[in-house]
Amino acid sequence: MSDITRCYPQLYALSERLLAAGQLAETNLEQAIACLDHAELKSLACIGIPSRFNPWETPAFSNVDYSRHLQIIEYLSRTDASAMMLLPGASLSTRAILTLGNEQQQARFFACFEERPTWTFFAVTEPQVGSDAGAINSELTHDEQGWRLNGTKTLVGAATLASAGLVFARYLNSQRLVMVFPTERVPSLRRDPLGAVGLAGAGLTRLTFKNHCVAQEDILGHERRELLQGLNSLSLVFERHRPMVSAMALGTTFGLLTALGTRTLSSVARRWVAQQWRTYHAIFQQMLTVADGYSNGQHQHALTSQLKRNATRLVEDTACHLPHWLNRDDWLEDHLLRKRYRDSFAFEYMEGTSHIHLLNSFRPPVAQGVSL
Ligand SMILES: Cc1cc2nc3c(=O)[nH]c(=O)nc-3n(C[C@H](O)[C@H](O)[C@H](O)COP(=O)(O)OP(=O)(O)OC[C@H]3O[C@@H](n4cnc5c(N)ncnc54)[C@H](O)[C@@H]3O)c2cc1C
Image (cartoon, rainbow, N blue to C red):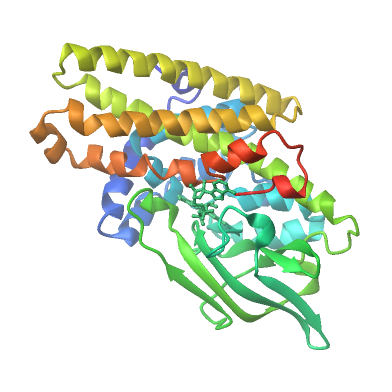
């Protein structure tokens, strides 16, 4: 039994539901989303949203500490990380709003959760700019008619279905995060879903803003003169979310190795699987250490980057060997395993590629250290 299921035995049933939703998502997104409509899944997906804005909190999943949250993500990813990403609820923007938004902005942003848990997005990546978040072109301008947003964001998770999101935009010589509330009735914001080979549940989307009206109160930190303060806070947001990507990569590795364990393997392959399990357990411990440090207020950029790099390398390495260790029919007939295989290669690109972590992790959390 996994430690985390001792605390939350309902995770067994919830992971079964995720598995069903993940399979439905291959052919019918609407049915998959309907399958995720479950009180405890909603509560779990809204972990991180403060109770005062979160009507979906259940007693079991209230006050979940960071370490347990990571373990829950890891556990559910053993079944289907992609289906977990399909869940509406908290996202990177949650932490950003809580870090940079004032009370009115937080209330306005989280109002979209009143009726049902909904999706939110955090848009930084742009075509041609990608990892270099400091070089973004999306621009916030101001004239006598008010504030306007122009630009294109790409590879933004959950944005097609989202009711609210944050957009990272240039304003004069600085950058700002702007709250955006998309509806079909706003032609100045276009949303195009993007195809994906792995982690389709992430719902990657391209966003195009053409003279999109922005209310002044929707600009985070507008009143602040010290803009580095805002970017510095952004780095801290990423530091919280990178271990979550690691947790998903670790959970996916668990799923792959467990599947291998049920097959007839050569002795060389069995030894290799045993070594992968040892590495898995070591990285799992590293994740718990990072979680403790974060909860105790430590700034541990290098360690967080190392964790993400270790976890994403492990899942890719495991996936790469999979088709070679399995016999041909096992590989061709196990649809779920091949789906997990495809997902395995998407984690490295989330919240900073390994190259970018190697370049930036030594830096203190200042503007040039910010990258997705
Ligand atoms: C599942 C998924 C979910 C995502 N969700 C979001 C989201 O919600 N919001 C969002 O804004 N973005 C999101 N992204 C985008 C992700 O953060 C980007 O993929 C990432 O920023 C990389 O950008 P890029 O694809 O343009 O690659 P590039 O930045 O063009 O990089 C291409 C390659 O070049 C390397 N490289 C780049 N610069 C350097 C350098 N200076 N030195 C050495 N090597 C370098 C990179 O490591 C990489 O291997 C998501 C991506 C995925 C896969």
